[in-house]
Length: 505
Image (cartoon, rainbow, N blue to C red):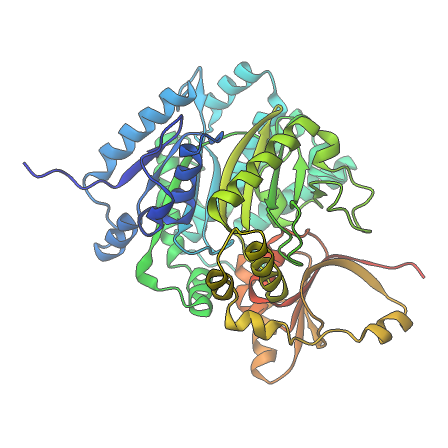
């Protein structure tokens, strides 16, 4: 009897079924999660569904290989055993994250769903287990917001009018509640507020999409997996692949991983960091973090994140507490891990982490995107540090990155003699001039007419990708150095200023 093809690879505990060299099959995220497990790092258990399933999905009218269901259930049992909790259980529930992971990094282009498995019953069980109702209601409202947007709207092929999508409508309900209560931040919302918000969200989902939010955990899981595969052929992912020269037939893997929670209170946090500064190439640990938050809060620019350490503070963030100051022991552990990871991979890495009630978990590592000047500095420094060979140093700097060294900049003399009207974080290199536009569609249309434009947004999101590419520069009112705008612009060597503020003269 022929052995069935392996489509699901477990990772967790002390040994993973994959490794870093398996990016073509497991995608970058899945391969590196497996590698971190094999290195003995604290990684929440999970499993990766291979890129071959994505290829099969599109070649067979969006149907899965018949072996997938059993292999997923077997892998889920291993995860439950490793984490000491059971998915969908009414006493000790396990929650899952579902993330994309192509072999080439595509930041923000495909989908993520967090807190999968929460419903009215598992929610009450988790409240009883943790004694922290605020965190549980917060996680539930996040699931409804992400799942209704990604699975029930986008993956279903629904294309709402500008600003009328279910996610925007739910965000309006959140802002309305904050305004009515006089709150400034999401973290000001109480457990009772969030409990009420969950019911408001459910009613809004029914109103906007014409169907109830699914309560069945397995239905949520399969819906999330399908949505990730669907996002491979989404408009923004296709646009990004055209720009970056990534083949359509590579497909994406899907990573299903145990949830760990950065939103359990002041001893919990989440962050994104780089083993070196991706904007300047300087050899110091660099990143941002938020207390009492989940991962999307950092990259979405919803809240202004704090610098990860003292050396990374700037004139804009010097008043904010770093992780090094707030949680010194956890910071030391993280700093040691990032140093060891850079030595292991021989490259600058982009890492994601969560701290749950003081315990550190690693959620991702990948080769980090950098602009031209940073790429050149890193290559030279890593050669001098004997991390890489001379030949490898030369190959590390792409031709288009050398071109970035010739990008226009603001005349330093003029800069010194001119009074600034606003200041912000220098997320992308160079300087630029152009006419201001406030939507990605206008940026594309105006650029086609031969106009130079600056795309100005409160914050960018993956739907803005075409407009970001068409613009000379990007300016956002929110977000930090690891926000979506910063990551994408830096990868393209495009001028970008984040978290801009007018200067009082």
